[in-house]
Length: 402
Image 1 (cartoon, rainbow, N blue to C red):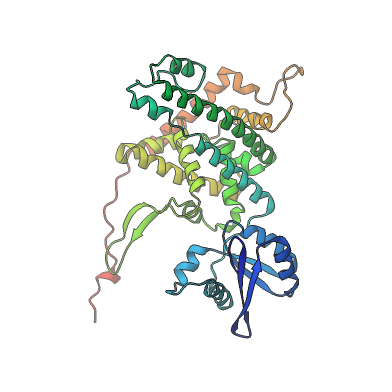
Image 2: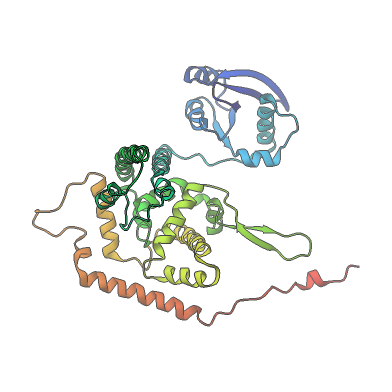
């Protein structure tokens, strides 16, 4: 099926030949009517589009299997000069019949819901980008001395700046929009927290320093079933954090920038977590500093993001928490998650709360000291490392051709 917004073009592979079935309306009733005309042993193939999951849910009860194809890989395998809906549907049928169809993983209902929530939150965050800073720069207003331009002190400072009336009105409109989006963001954070509060995988990822509930939920929503990645390099590639490689003939492989193929939102979350990791003591910060001294901040952040992807694969596959976790910090994270999800407060109940240790300065300092010791141990380990030069060619590449 080559699906569109209002219709789907259907081509049937039967007895080794393609047969044009016609068009099906992209409505629930139209798809259900088409499903009743199929057999339980039939298999349906669609490409991954915005409404593909709805098609999967409607047709699954009527057929043996509904397969979602990866459109980028289908295009790479079967590229045609003449492109029509009928040809595209026929290509999907032929690839599946020959066993060359690149399939995309279909998430379960809960993972799909979590993906929608994370995607909506990302849209709200992007819409919060405003023009206030541009207006201030255009009128030579110096940088705000406060940490946040839109908190109480920042807004009071903004009111004191000399600006034209039309620009001041534009700033007021932007601030009202930011306040409205902040309410939407709080609602989405609460919904995500309710989905993640009982998820053992989200709690496990929160043991990593710098990974909060939003990052952990976004990674779990993107990954889904970790068992579909046989090795950590597969997960790194899924996030688009693997370097591009060019190699031909007897020449040496040339490595470039990261591929950026895969789930861009999850990759951005890992990079965001990498910047947070760089500020907290531990082996990951030592790794960040080592790369930063050689290649700069940006490359170091991406390298830490890749390191986090490998770490996440091991934690989820082996079902183990992060070894260098700080228990008091982890307990505070999980308590904040529970409160966002609607858990009652623990004040005045006559006992210590689950995050009590975070309020004890001695405990926090002892955990911080342990993380600093781990950071120094990493620095000692890599101090005597030497950069390896170009690999010498093997004997096979140096043999004389007979």
